[in-house]
Structures are given as C-alpha cells and as structure tokens.
Image (tube, rainbow, N blue to C red; front, side, top):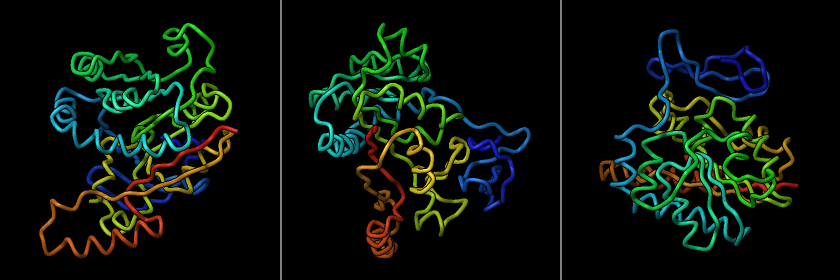
Length: 265
C-alpha cells in the first residue's frame, strides 16, 4: 500500500504481530503495512455492535464531552457523522438541537441504530454520489462534520477530507478524533500499544501529520484537546505511575488520543 502522498519508500519503525508499522520517508506519515496473506478487519460485525449497545452509557458520556467542545464553536446547524456506528453520537447530538445525518457502511450497525435509537443512517461509505442521492440537493448544506476514530480506518483519507471541504458550508467545522501515535504510551509500548490496533488501523496519526493532511484542503485548526485511556483496569500499584505519566502527557500533547476541531476558510 502506498502512502496517500503517493510515495512508496518507507522505514520500518517496529512490528506488531503480523503487521509492520512503517514511516513514509517522503511526508512522515506512519501507516500499517500488511504482509502478504494477512488481512485487516473491515466493518463492524454483530459482536462489535453488541459491545456498543451493552456499554452505551460509557460511550454516550464520551460523546457528550466531544459535542460539548463542538457546541462552544458551532452551537447549531446540520451535523454529519462519517462512520456513525450504532448512532450514539448522533442521538446525543440531536438531543442538544442539531439536525443529524450519518453514513455507516456496516449493515449490522445500521440495523441496530434504527432498531434501538430510531436513527436512520445512510448504509454506505461517505462519497459524493451517495450524499447527493440521500439529500437530493447540492453538497454545501452541512455545518459540522464529525470523523471520530474513523479516519485511521479509511483506505483513502485524503479523498474523504477533500470531500468534507466540498460538503461543508463556509465557516463549517470539521471534527476529527484519532489515536495519537506521538503519545508516551505508544513510545513505551510500541507494538503492544492499546490504540495501535494494526488489524484495523491503516494509518497512525500525530498532530503534525493530521494537520499536514487536513490544512491544505482549506482548513485552519481552531481547537485541540487530548485524553488518555481509563487506567482502572490496571493493578493498583501501577496506577500512580500511569497517573503521573498521564498528567505530563496531557500538558505536553503526548496523551493517547487527539480531538481536533478545524474551521473551513
């Protein structure tokens, strides 16, 4: 697989099981190289859907926090989510007044969203023809687009960001959440880092490479926040160590996840 900058020359950073984590020597983007005969996972299956439904309160809490950050910048409008899963974020968004629309290619997720939350998702990947068919109008009628822990899964992230720029109204907002490859935990755990997930994640982003992907499409970064994983699953004697690392990571931009808000110029 080539980098989205079209270059193919890489340097191996480390291995994670059957997967190679490589660095593009042309643009600096990190990606997962899949060896011959090995496949990455595709869309959510039934077991993934059940996990989100069973643990929905945990996810709703995270999504309310995300939407709180968005609300400060764009308190109203039409919000589109790319990779909407079972519709939990959209359900929370409509509760605070947003008009919502979501794309989700997983059939199991689409069925679950309609059955459990009364949310009708567009059962396709996000692309221009699907959007026009679903809306019956021109592209520029969206105020907010959310891509939350989805961009790292996509085959062609550059194409998706380009379409986001085309779809958003003037001064529209693009919200992207991704794992942070420049986190302390990634440096320490490398191939065993919890958020690496090489069987699913094609790309490994940092703040630098995310800006490098998004800004050239006519966006400027207006807000960024960081967060770490829940440490309650760890042994009690490890938690003070994690607490110290997490505190420093949050202060220095080396936490495990990044949430970035961009505004269209």
